[in-house]
Image (tube, rainbow, N blue to C red; front, side, top):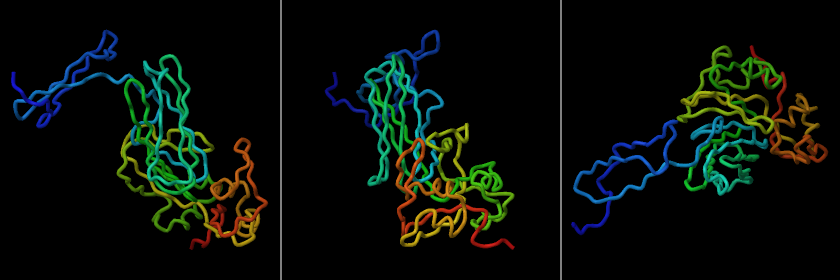
Length: 290
């Protein structure tokens, strides 16, 4: 024989053929891989079908989750696997160094298990969350989380009238607060370069906003005024000064408040929160439209 080292240099996978049974399910350990090389080479191919499958409506790679800063998000994930009893999972977020980090819990079953991704982000921005499931094989899902403060991510088909109704304000107020919007009747979304589905997280639960995977487009719409709480002021003081409702002001400023209980929601409104920017939503805007 030829005494040469095993190598895959100069070779590429040309085709993968998966063997299936009568029911159309992949057969573990069976199939073929066709490789094309630019030279005579000796190599080996290890091939098998992953035993880990995410069951719909679990999130897919590239899906975007939109959540308010300071609010909890819980994402259920169903995994089907022949090695569910020995399944493990870990989650990481990028960039690192955040004041809070996502966690994931598992509830194993016979041939599947339920996972729950939970996070209460306390910083505004766009974050990459990677979830890796380890069994006999490994599968990773990369999700993107968009954390907003005093904004709504308006997507295709939504109007300022609908957004105003969600936040108990008027479309006129939103139009004034967003000078970049040329017409309140036709809002142009911006493309993000992302591909996937959009999920909206409210009150801890995340639901699909767009069913089909595709190019993600939308527009960050400011929904209220950002007001600086002066020294010694409490949230009720700020509400009395600029308007709005106490309930909605609490809802939009969870990152700045001390949460005593999640269910039912109880927060500390007695102590001052001076030198903090609060989002206050009301029917009045900083300017009156002409």
